[in-house]
Image (tube, helix red, strand yellow):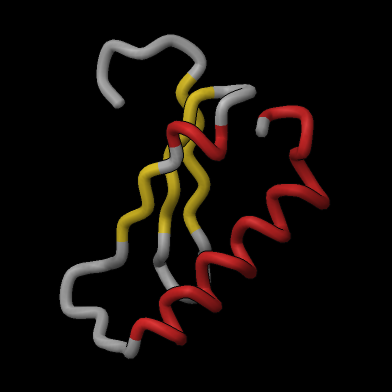
Length: 64
């Protein structure tokens, strides 16, 4: 999110899935990206995002 203050990014080191958001506005501003060439069904992609979000809540809830 170029030009937006307090933007944060998290990348899952296993899946390569990443998410960017504005601090304190995760639900309103999250933008997820998957690595080029990543294939998978929507259920797998949703699971990967859920695991990443769960990790963020546990480890960096103050940023969400």
